[in-house]
Amino acid sequence: MSYAVDELAWPKVGRVLEEDPRLIMTVGALEQHGPHLPVGTNVFIAAQVARAVSERCRVLRAPPFFYGVTVSGGPFRAPGLRRKTLHRAVNELIGGWEDLSVRQFHLITAHRYEPHLEALLMTASGPAHKSVYDLYQTDVSDVLESDPEFEHAGELETSLMLHLAPDRVNMERAADFLPEGLTLRKYTRRRVPKPPIVSRGVLGSPRLATPEKGAAVFQRYVDVLCTAVNTTNSDELLG
Image 1 (cartoon, rainbow, N blue to C red):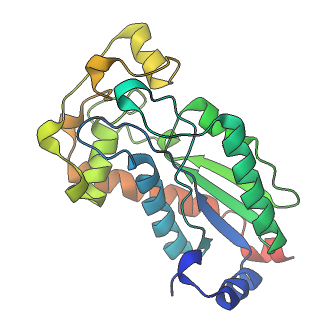
Image 2: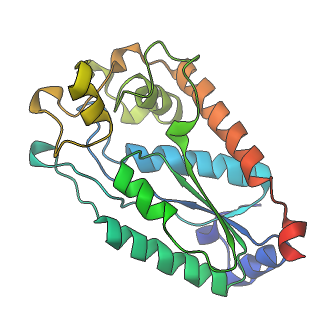
């Protein structure tokens, strides 16, 4: 059966939650990812991981929330939210689901901008359990040739998209951008107001990407999250 809320009639949603009061929520962001990847890369990757985890663990999942906190500007402009706006929106969604008897929330994101993560971590969950998972905190350095800690639209994300949606990737337009030192760290953690124009929205080496690397990374994400989601089982929540 489907575990996607938007694909089920409301009586079915209620019956599923009566048996297992857990919910997976995806919070993404629209943001530049170079000239070779779509602006929805963050939310697409997170949503595909959420789908796989939901189906394997048999846990209900909400539709993706496409907007997050971003700093893109200039030619890389894409719509985003302020931290307090995202915080309020997710709080209201959690509150609504709590009213429908959800007792454990699993928030999944693939956007490592610190204010975005802070907005999710600071959301309240009342009597329910809440966990926030930044996919990019999972160690996949053994799979990749470059350092996944310092990249954006590089080998990691491009490999994932080549595996999940190769039709959305234009490798002919992929170009590496490798700054050094302080510039590298500032750009990675989004402490600069916008990406350097010369980067074209890329940090790292997308030309090293392969679908095989993407498949290995995706499988690890799913394995790690399934273990986390099942740490607290439905019997404990219902008891």
